[in-house]
Image (cartoon, rainbow, N blue to C red; front, top):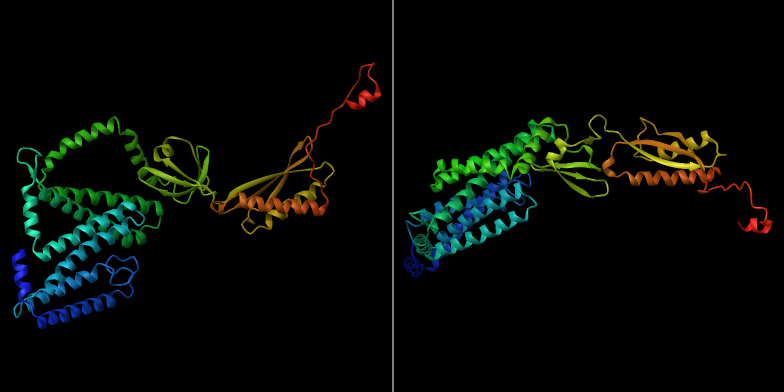
Length: 426
C-alpha cells in the first residue's frame, strides 16, 4: 500500500466501521491477555515469553499480532480496514522490540551496550511501522536500493547491507536465546558443578554463535569459501600479535575443565589473596575480603604459582600475636587467649583455638593464638580485631601487664674526671 492508497482508504472510512474495528481489536487484546495470564501463572519472572507482568513478555504481542491479522483479513471482506491494519504494523514492531529486548536482557543483564542496542532497535522498529502505515516504506526501500557502495565490481546497495545487518542480528540473537535456554533448563539441573556448567555454557554459546554467523553470512549472499583467506590471516595474527590473547582464552577453558581452581575457592595469586567470584574466558576475577577485586589473566593461573587455600580443606587459619610480661602465668595467659577466640561465633570449634608460647622476646613473653574460620570471604581483620579486643579485656581483668617496648643500658665504667652529678646527667 502506497501513500495514495492510504489516503483513499482513509477517506472511505466511516465512524461506524472504525468503532467496529476498535471493538474487534479490544477483543483480540483481551483474548491474548487471557491466554498469557492462564499459561503464565507459574512461570518465572525472568521468562522471555511471559515477562514479569504477563504483558511485557514476547507471547502477548505475538498472540495479539496473530489474532489481529486474522481479524483484519476477515473484516476486510465486508468493509474497508484501517485500524486493524495499523494495529498489525504496531504489533509487528512490538514483537521485534520485545524479542531483542528480552533476549538481550536475559543473556546480558547488566550490559550498557545491550541497553543501547535495545533503544536502537526500538527506534528503527517504530520508524518502520510509521512508514508502513502511511505507505512510505516501499518508496524508502526503493531509494535505499538505489544507493550503492563500491565494494567490488558489482557494488552493494545500502538496502542489501541493512538487510544483512538485520539478518545477522536476528540469527545471532536466536543463537543467544537457544544457548541461554539450554543453560537455564538443562545445564543447571544436569551439571551440579558451577565450573563445569560455566565451561559447558561458554562452549555451547560459542558454537551456536559461530553457526548462526555462518547462516547469516550465507543468507546475505557472502561466499563462505572466502572465509578461508580470513582464517589464514587470523592464524597468522594469532601466531604473532594475538598469541597472549589466545593463550588466555585457551587457559580459561583448561582451568574450567581441570577444576584445579573453581568459583568460590580462596586463592593467593602474586601476593593478592581473595575468593574467586567468576572465571571468564580471558580472565578470572578474585575478590579480597576488603572489597577490592583483581583481574587475573588466565595464563598467569596456568604458568605461575597459585596457592589454592580451599582445595584440600575449607578451614582457614588466622593468627594473632600478643606479648606479656615475664612474670605472667603462662597457663592463664593461654586460657585467656583461647577463651577470647572461642567466644566468637565465626571461629570453629574443630579444630579448637590454640595458643603457643612462641618466643622469649626482649621485653616479654610472645604468644601466638591460632584459630580457624570456614568463611574467610566475610573478612579476617574484623574477626581478628574482635578477638584482640576480647584478649585485651581479659588480660586487664586478670591483672596481666602488657609491657611497653624498652631498652636497658648498662654502664660498666666512667672516666675518673667525671663527677657523680655528670654521670647522673648521662
